Amino acid sequence: MKAEQIKLDHEIRFEELKARRAKPCDGEGVNGQTLFDPSGVGNMAFQTKRFGEMMRHFLPKMPQESAELPQFFETVEKLYAMYEVPAEVQAKILIPLHTAQAKSLVNQMTIDDMSKYDELKEFVLTEYKLTEYKLTPREYKIRFETAVKHADKTYTLFAARLRNLLSYYLKSRFVKDYDTLVELFISDRLEISPSEAVKLYSDPKRKGLVCC
Image (cartoon, one colour):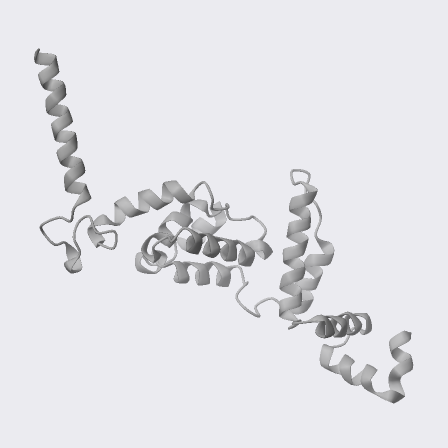
C-alpha cells in the first residue's frame, strides 16, 4: 500500500511538472522573456541542447580541406533554414563540429562574437583566407587540377569535392551562363583574361588564332 502511494505521488509530481512546462511561467525573465519562452535568454541552455541533439544527426563535420569550407557553410545554412534553427543557438551547436585547428582559431574570438553565427563564419573563412576574392582564380584552378582521391574516400565523395572546387573557380571567374563558360575555356587555353579573350577571338583579323 505504501509503495502504491509513493508511485502515485511521483505520477502527480510528474504531471504537475509537465503542466508547468506546457504553459508560460508567471514571472518574467531577462529582457521581459518568460522562462519557458523559446526566445527567452533564460531558456538558452535548453534550446541549445534541444537543437544540438537534433541537428547532430544532420549537420556535416567540418572538412579538413580548407577549400571545401565555403560549401560546408552553405550546407549548414540550408539545414538551419530547413529545420528552423534559432539564430541564437546556430553558432553554439556548430562549434563542436569544428576541426581541432578551427577550434584553436575560434578560441581567439570574444565570447560575444563566438556566439554569433555570422561572426563565427566570417572569422573562420578569414583565417583560412577563404572570404570572397581571398583566393585568386588561378589558385582555385590549381586546387581543382591537382586534387587527388584519398584512400579513405569514395569516388562519389571525390567527385563531389571536384564539383565544389570547380564551382568555386567558375564563380571566381564570374561564369554565369554558357557563353561566359565558353569564353573562360578559350581564355584558359590562351592563358589570358576572359575580357582579353573576347577582344581577341571577336576581332576578324585574329580569327585564325582561336583555332590554333
